[in-house]
Length: 309
Image 1 (cartoon, one colour):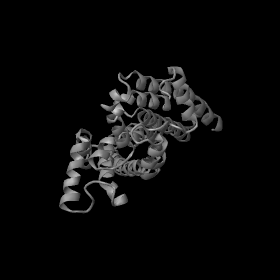
Image 2 (cartoon, rainbow, N blue to C red):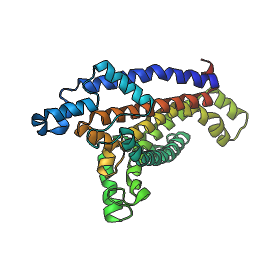
Image 3 (cartoon, rainbow, N blue to C red):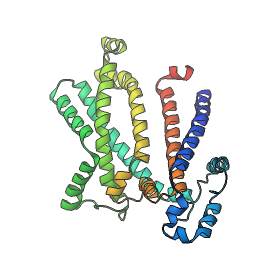
Image 4 (cartoon, rainbow, N blue to C red):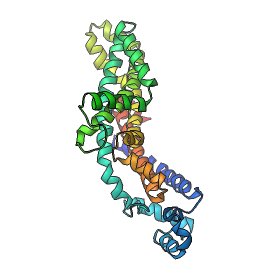
């Protein structure tokens, strides 16, 4: 198992290099000078200031030198300094990260609990009323726009019932309830459909029929023999979903007024804050890389044959 993890870890290195090259290239092919954009109309009359800032951020260096500084900084945990906030990018990300993590973890818990329960019931009770109703709700959830559900939850639970704040982070974890519910409910729709599909496929396998023929109780057959094998494709989907929760919640953070990493990236894009965008994108890439590593390890745990491939 140790060799398997080490092999997977080493495979991340070329991916990391590729991500740095793509990110750095994309940020540098964007037309316009970021320093001029930051200074606005003042840039035309303050050319010495423009040159000083370009020198301060190393933008007057050759491109390959800028890239090497970029990679060296990442390896030392330094993503550069924000143009707009005039603070280290890592500090800005770490300040907002707890909110985004709390939101993503809460949404994932809601997603898994509701999605797996609904998908399992639908699979066990295939073609029953519970199956039809569950899949109909799941289909509605998959088709539902996130902004519409967010506004609906705000209207019902914040304006009408007053149970949760409408927006902002003034009430701590209570402020995360509605955005987490929005993300979790939408994610649970896909999880329920995937769980049902995977479980039905496994329940038709020969070893499940053999287990039933041996007289094992249905609960043991489903949860001990079938469910574990049905989890493998589900793990992939949930891992990607968790990465998306962590990095793609910008829209909900704006709707609910949460100062998370997603909103930070969106603000950086509007402000054309080059180093903050680079740092945020690299940070998101790291999250996906390590989530994929965790998924590979979980695969090996669920199916030991994978370790020897």
